[in-house]
Image 1 (cartoon, rainbow, N blue to C red):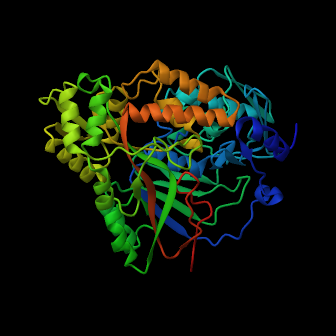
Image 2 (cartoon, rainbow, N blue to C red; image 1 turned 135 degrees about the horizontal axis):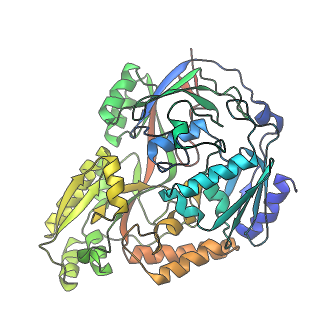
Image 3 (cartoon, helix red, strand yellow; image 1 turned 90 degrees about the horizontal axis):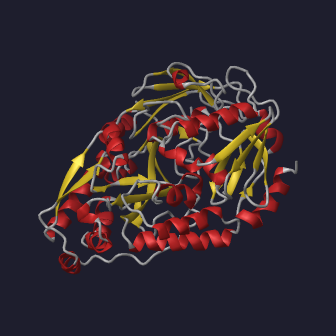
Length: 501
């Protein structure tokens, strides 16, 4: 098999993928003197599961935990750019229908057993079988394995497959749902000391990890859903790192010399789908008029001055396939007239569905703007599990969520969420399906970009949702925390963190 660097050069012109070599022996040997110490951290989502390939794989708490506990084959560092992780090299055929990954020599799980291609294949198959929202990335993708390699064979060309695979974490081939209830075998920089679903996840370094060993002695992810409580815990020293903080608390935190605020540009877009299968929202003219009725620029300046900026696309600027669109201008008078012209029933009450407390003011403000033109909307705050169940059942009229793009390729976002088969937005357009298939299967990166631009324009103009804001992730750490850097998707990593004495 060709070397990783040679393989990367060969496929770049074909599918727009770039892979970089790891740092040779340094990555394989581990390294770095551990400074020790223990930290406790908390975000806005509780850790309900630590099964990285199960039904909650892309749940916020599970995703963050998985990044610390497990290894993928490769990791995204930019649009179409990857670092090798458990795989030391990979090779893609000219038609993007065969992807072969070669594993690093001698890598093992936390129990000392070897990591094999069969383990990778089984992890992938569990992901597909879980039928989670993430599983839709792998329709009709076959997998075969040897001890040292794993090969994926999509039924149709899938040049974005490496980006999608960054979300598949490697677990033992015999892992089952029950394997994650106590102390699972892990493949990443940490292993589990103890775990209470919805409560604390306590981790210690995995001394069998193939890469650089964590510097910390212990890492605890706590469940503190209320942002004010997380901020207080940080300032008192109970927590060392927090995320999911609100912009209005940044000024408070910046005034504390014992705290540092860190912002991370990821791929997140504040997304407000409008359920096109709801009779009141079936017309694009109605959906676009509702978008026009809301003063989003004012809301961003008032509520998200630190973390938000007006969006001009369905996916973020860091994503392969990003295509800017003409912003929808705020014009309530025109919006009211457009609704009347479209025959909108002003007696209808729209169900506005959200789960995160950080969106409460935003949702109330949107409801107020809609009321100003005579549109009734009811803000419905739901627990995350209920929100997700209702989201998938299309039991809502408008929702709000922060949608990122795992792997930084638009196929994960547009190709997974906006097809008729996805049934995620209530919107079905065969023309869009055709465009997305072209974007997802072309081996020419420029053709893929052009197709995603066409898809974005259609989604934007048809107002499948309102896409008002690109969002940065805000973190705050104790000043004693060193080496904290969110990953390329703006999510927290702790394998390089240490505590200054």
